[in-house]
Length: 360
Ligand code: F6P
Image (tube, rainbow, N blue to C red):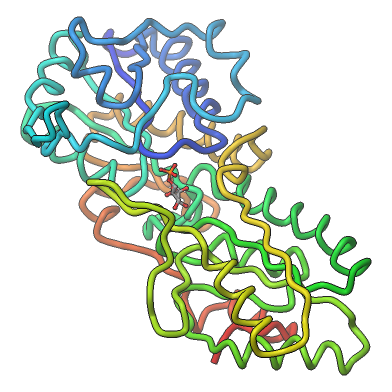
């Protein structure tokens, strides 16, 4: 047992599978092994902005049922940057001080923030400005936080996308179709390349590697010449049109929502060759559902390590997974290092070795 502490925990940004496993591990280790109190904060920093702050005491018994549940039982948001918070009248207001005041009103000694690079950057700024002791845990299905080999949620998303490909093989073969599967990944193609290789795709398109529609058509024709009547194409939502345009569904004040590159490719392919295409957009299915064993394992590891960082007074750090070990790095380093798919890296070489068309 160390000194008695009250710590807060919040989830920020898009949800993903595995978040509840992190919260559970934090509560077990902090309560059972250190004798601390843990408060779950609702709806990311919005819970700290509310008056009274929206937070509730978490016991091991309370968190246990959530181990296998998707999403985050604390709630989250990927909207409302507190430094430019969108108000009802359309104006933007700096509400950062309300959040740090909320932290102090709750009497917290430290805060664990689970988020992607955007959330971690905002939380760090808040912590520096408002004297909060912050420890970060990286989560994002996009797996683009550069300092960690794995972020919470990525493995489950890849499993879901792979299972979708497994299912689509049969219906594609039955109808001799080109099946295009659009997967998430706001800036990076990690889900696409991992699921594409695992699921036996014939074409994988990622934003890191340029492609041509003719290149895709040639890959489909090559399969036809080999007697293969169908083709599976995986495309990351961040892939641009051949002319370099981003394909979006909608945009609001804070961000644009990607979507539609699968449909674009379908039309382009049909316009240039004889092929019947169908498009499947996996969307938020990749974020939901039961977390994979690996996401639960990494989640538990990160949760325990984050509590140990607080016990050691090592704030302004995030936990990461590197070379089979959990290690901590400064939040500044974590934010600075972005991980796109390396076009010269192992997975790209593997895909090429398998004869998958990736681009030019
Ligand atoms: O960053 C995670 C992510 O799932 C991206 O892959 C995707 O583009 C985005 O979030 C979707 O966000 P929203 O939940 O706002 O639609």
